[in-house]
Amino acid sequence: MGEKGVSVSAVVVAAGSGTRMGGVSKPELTLGGKPLLAWVLEAFGRTEVSEIVVVCGENRAKLEKIAKSVPVRQHVGFCGGGKTRTESVWNGVNACDARSKLLCVHDCARPFVTPELISAVIAEARKTGAASACAPVTDTVKYVDEAHHTVFTPPREYLFALQTPQVFRRDFYEVAYALALKKGGRFTDETALLEAADVRVSYVRSETQNMKLTTRGDLLLARALLAVEAYREGKKAK
Image (cartoon, rainbow, N blue to C red; front, side, top):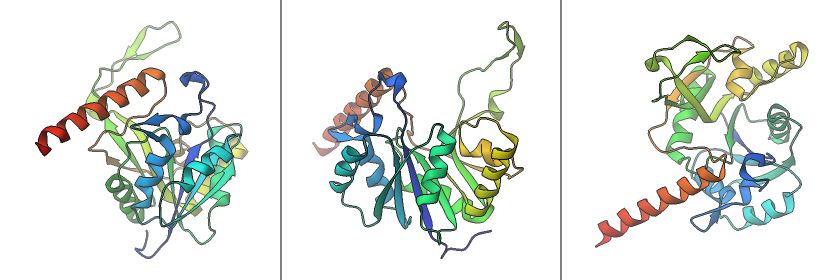
């Protein structure tokens, strides 16, 4: 489906309200002494993406200041978000270079993303047209009805938690978005949007920690993981 020479634009979604984080702008939160946005920009700066567009809210000036402190080879642009995630991604896509045939969408709230994972998902999307990072579900999951009675228990080996980055052909996305506007519906990520338009999405298993920071508890866990990693590195150095 794709060619190696086709350029890729990255859309970093950083326009959320941070309600479950206590109303704090997640891109500005610090982890290991760096804002989350800096973590994400550094990872994308070491990949083949040709440009990075950050979708933001009213804190645009603060995020632009953070971006200027991160030395990446790509141009980093900014645009305003929408009322929903779907609208925000659409705004980001429209702010991208029209010559980019592949789009890579990533949540700023996933600061541990690696250049290797980004490149692996891009490579898969070049072959199939649409791909997403994912991780196997390790807990037993119950599908319940409105009364919270169990309907069935799906086998865990068939369950995966979707993550970002998600990469897809621009033309696939534009058709899927147009159909979504016509039919309505709410989509929590771009794979759901694409699959609603009968686009088959392939999945790339994330082999590293790629957690999403949604609550204060997640932030504390992320800081603890960094502390453990720093301790291990210190032991190795000795």
